[in-house]
Length: 199
Image 1 (tube, rainbow, N blue to C red):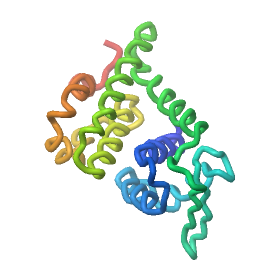
Image 2: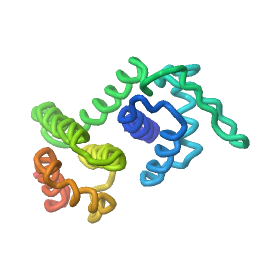
Image 3: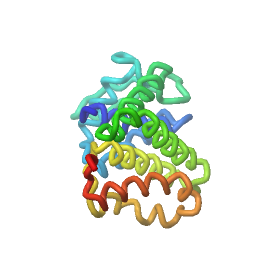
Image 4: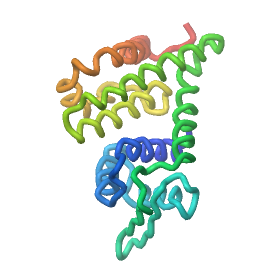
């Protein structure tokens, strides 16, 4: 998956969790959370502008960027961030990434495995209704994206790769453990067996 596609998946996945809040406050929160993924504010704003109503029509809002005067947002009276086209685009980004899960395994089994892990990730993100705070909902979204990137080898699997999520996981373990268990088992298998797929 291309770096720009990953960035867009991050942006759109976050915005998808913010219905009825098409405003600059959400954009500021997005920029704050994007720092955890090493995305700079100008990059995020530029992608938002490219995807807005006057360009690719992936977002319902329109952005007017001026790096001197700041950002203007025209929400076009929308109650959600993603257009129907944007929803389809986000699904295609997620599908593109999930199809590369276990791409180094036997091609005959790859499709079943892709579907399985995509299902577990979907179950995991569905836990957002159980989260007590808006911050936890956003953290869950970010955690799911990081897990997806680890499963597709687009993020390096190394010791401490998910350290920043430890307090969140400990706080919500009871709600998250069921969909997380098969994902963690797979990541552990890769880590413990030196990520060798040719055995």
